[in-house]
Image (cartoon, rainbow, N blue to C red; front, side):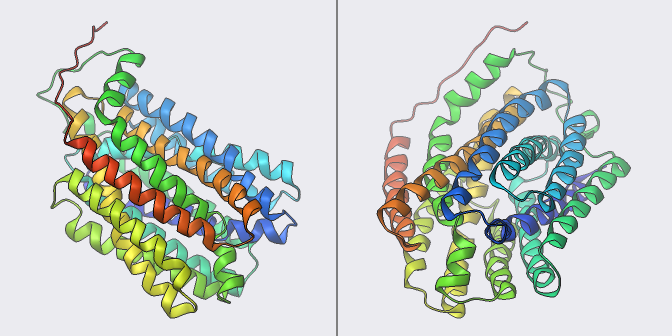
Length: 387
């Protein structure tokens, strides 16, 4: 088992996620769910992911990567297939919560396994982006050629393939073969692990919640903006997503590990504000596709910068999965903030572009505050009792 099978599994599982995420909003609308309820349905999903990432990230450090990698993949495959059955708000509510719980189990395990294998996390992130590119492209054409239900069946199949490959390749055992042979294992209790991660990386967690939270106020209605405001077809919506995520793959793969992680993080956050401000200016397929190039570059540096910063701060404590679990929980927290903000802004103005302007302003302010705060950051040595 090695780096290549981790990349393959990350690519396939992210393809499965992208296929379902890209067209879920349109499915909800076709099932008669109102615009406000579409926003509210993101909340149980995100709350479940917050809890799942936080709990299973720590467990992955305590009990090994493999059990939670396998559990997360199989449950993700099962729950994403359930989207074809609900017909009303509350049945979708239950499925969204179950799906969020499942999806939050394995991300910290797979990044922890990659770190154990001494794999650069910028490179791993690039395969996640490639998965989103593949999922958007395939999902767009499947949606045009067949019913929307088949998208979620295909997503489920990709998760099951990832699960089978993880069993065959024994993915998640790298820590026993390669990682940390020369490092003593710190038998930290649960609260100590969380305290170390939060004290070292609370700035990054907060910036992720603000930047990604305001971004999710855009994404919650993004397919509707593309379909109704810009008049894009379903396959064009898929291509727009591919433009973003394929750009991410190229940038992450070539540049993701080359620069100081916190400088990358700041640059990605600043460029995100630029990208958000460009969205309302687009009026057709070509123009919105060009904005996705900017967005893809911005998120590449933002994502790899955040993951690498957290890894560098916590690797010596053998606390990678716990700290990354909290990072992924921050991304999930943003998926709670975003829908609430989107619903609130919808009551002020029935326009998809207001959330884009708000996201640009808040992200820019947050970036400036974060950059200034680093000037006052002092290295600290954190010592906790062990069992």
